[in-house]
Image (tube, rainbow, N blue to C red; front, side, top):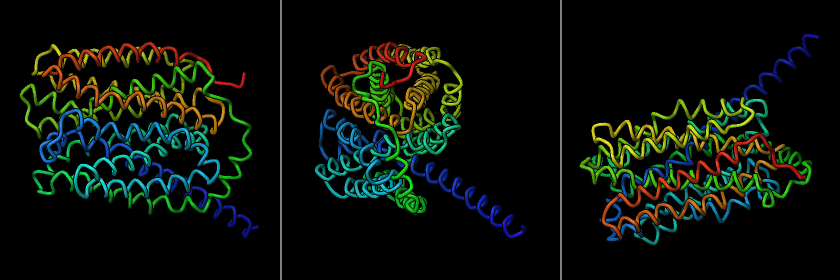
Length: 404
């Protein structure tokens, strides 16, 4: 009797240890998905001057990962179904680290090549993480999406803040400031390695799922996709160009970088809470309306307001962007009935959505070059925010995607 009790106790302990190790792996994997991109924004001016490129070409540094997201996202669910989610995520982090190192190795060619490679790796992780959470934590989706989002945004905020000090203050240059994030990828590989032992079981579970619905024929899926893409466009434009916008209003480069960092840090509580609230509501229409109103208020403050309240305006923008991303991640699970359909919706939304978002940083850079100021680019963002409201309300209604 004692022997059986001891065996059960050991099994429970092993199971608990595996769950906590999985949570830790998810947290560290999430930390890799923003920092390699948000670290670029504060360094754009340094990179531009060092390589002698235009604002439009500088915008491609942020746009290229989004194009990579669009290209590979539809393939991610198929790769996971064929090889197992854990193995695909592990290999993706390897390529992410390689891409970071190539990006920081030499001139503009390596910068763009490494950017594309890390973008492809991040795209796979972006697609598979919501479905992995739906599969592994079906009763705690909101909580785990919150943890995942906080980890991603926290590291993204830190990366924005430390980029200029590492590049200029510590003397590492922009290459060192971008390349240092390969260390985080290495740590993640070590922590995620234990999940590879369960690859076979995951592959068998995936194979037992019913045939997925065709999300490409669903109006609701398209609403989710356009909401995802437009809110992503806003985010990537802000993290790329907000430091330059603030510097044009008299702020120093260090202060502009830290303002972007503080903006992202300040939204961590709402980023954690938003998915939990969304998961307890029959529909999320009210949340979408509040999210967009915060963005309108913050951007209008930057455009027309007193410079004394710049931090308030940027925090309001951050609350909107952080909340909209968390809600988009939740919609992949809330609007589907199983983990594989969630992956398919995630793949579609992030493919088309990031292709749409990829237009943002380059187009805003072009508008700035063409007009010589930031008013026209900011008006463009207000129009995009209105479209986020339209498609967000349509996506947030109480419906799910089904074969019918």
